[in-house]
Image (cartoon, rainbow over all chains, first blue to last red; front, side):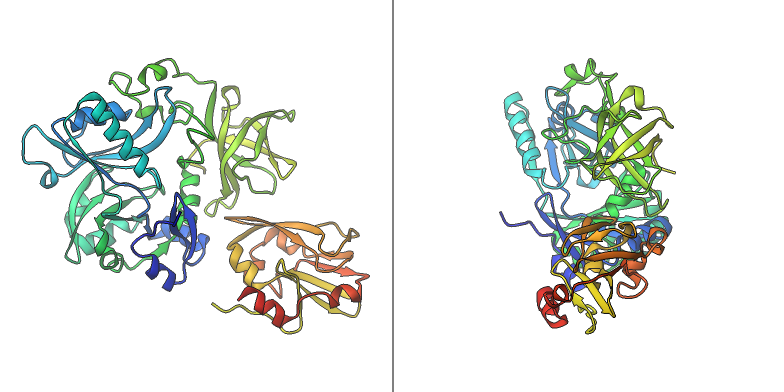
Length: 365
Length: 127
């Protein structure tokens, strides 16, 4: 199947970017070097083209009921312009995807008082599946709302780093400084009306901009900062201990509940959602998501075994890298709960050799 | 993008280079290879005295994004490893044909050298 292309595929190629397949999309993985891009985001600002992320718009009289039943967090506490991190689970409580749900700002809400509009952002390649999941359940439950897969209507850029607020304020006006963490607001950049959400995936302050697909070039060019690819996005999120869908959890290859994956805080068991019954009995899981650092030379990678100090396999690495900020090898994975205390000695099997490691808190320091 | 391909070296299809001088061979990876790998963060090299076969794996190089095996362009015995790479693996990115060299071998076979890619042949391979 042909890869889906972000709107600026050609512009990025002209700029010298290298590309990789990710979630069925042909995306820039590196513009200059992962280290250069990573450092720019930690110390100044970088801009990522994340147009591979999905956008699903749910609106109508029963939009809140549908969102509440298909996501684990409580959408009823969202006012227009609010956002929240959430998970989507199946009947067994296994995470299918993680997402950010936004209640759209007031100007983009339906005119009728009894209607609400949400936009949520599934991970790359999950938009079709999530659109189908939403429409199927809507029909099954007889709910009155529309569900639109708007993934190829919206380009999405992530402007991240300590200078991100200044950059956006210069391009869109001072009022963007008032947008609170996880909230979303209307903004205009170079005449393009867009949504500016104070969210990101790097651990830095920043914004994610949702804009019309056809205006991508205009908005991209409005920011004079380091272009960054998915390589730096990965090292930045690993340093923070953030989950990557399809790697740190996956319904087929790495089936995990939100409690195992360390995101139990997005599960509101006093709401009714698919997977709630299973999760009620799963709050104290036997295995948990942890961070670790290698104390010997080597780089942990996805799929490597984790052993205890006696060499018995107890878990697996789901993500790992050489941290560009800390200049040490760090990783994420699942181990039995008796091994989760920071400082616990473990080993990671790097190409057949057991390397010493220890459990550490995340974000890594 | 054009890559540096020095004319006084021979190359293996897997992107290692060799410089042969009076019975001693110095080995590294090409400019193209270091660019493909990106930021090099770890290099594993053999011990001195180890015997290597032509196209045998002699080590591993890891960048932030990938792991690659390293193959010897020629057979021979390791006389020196570039220990600077253990502390500064980024030398491979900065200077792949100079300070980023990896090994020196002795007892190198002339026949092995003749079977390697010439600079032009290597240029054709990567273009």
